[in-house]
Image (cartoon, rainbow over all chains, first blue to last red; front, side, top):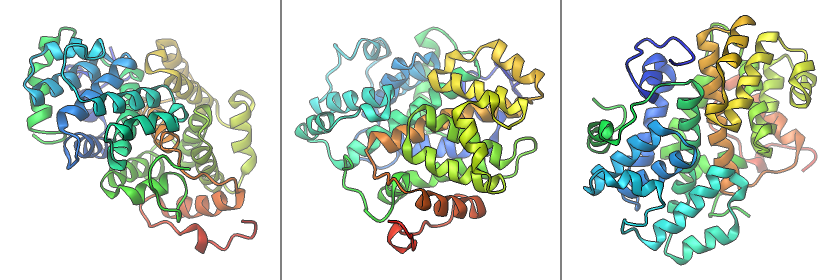
Length: 179
Length: 191
């Protein structure tokens, strides 16, 4: 049971919260849509992997699993990607640039000031641009918000990975705040 | 020096808003909805105190100072309330409801799951509504984003109280959706 009375208790995770307060739902959805599906030199699959990894480090089951499922949909990889993200992607082919950006995202997850010049230089060495570094920091920061919002209000979430398959496909191909 | 190439005309998150207008729009719309728009049971000053308090827990100098200045102007130019909330909310001259909500904000800052049923029950016993609890959690969560965004890219955060006070006065009056002034055009006496 969530900490507050939602208008529809059946809606899991952030979905119930967005339905509870429309005034804040719109900018939250616009932010997710721009960050994860808007124009960028990072693919949506790569950006969803960043979002899902940060959510895993924050131990937010709903955000982690749903965004990992969205990444799986973008990459057409199957839901095994969800567990591989938990393990740090040992079995997924990702670029060295993305691994360097994931390191920056992990620093942001711990605290903003943890990002060092060396972290940024390592990402640049692998070809990361200013806008990719910017977007990585903002995606990681934004999921430190979404994760706290979802867990801080005690929302419920389905357990098994399979329960997120359709949701991930909708997030990937329809988008955020679109029906 | 910032980690990426940012404008020198604006400090903190303002330099990031100029850098990437596409994400600035929802980030500003969110802060406007959470902190400035009318609210049935939390004043703008109280909501700014939650933002300032969370930013201070995250040790974000820019966000603590700008939202502290906005809070001051929303609270009838009372800098002392802001100072006392940052030093110790339990003894600060704010309502018992706000003290209980600040405890929830601190839990959210340290991790979403740290908010307990008892924290929520206590806030309710001090008169907090569901909407107050929802908005407190979202404000604290959102400042865990804004603070990381500002510090994670190592933005310019000048140490100048007059600058934050002038910017804070403008935001308290106009909200978050109007254009900022360049620092060089702010006629500061001490910079």
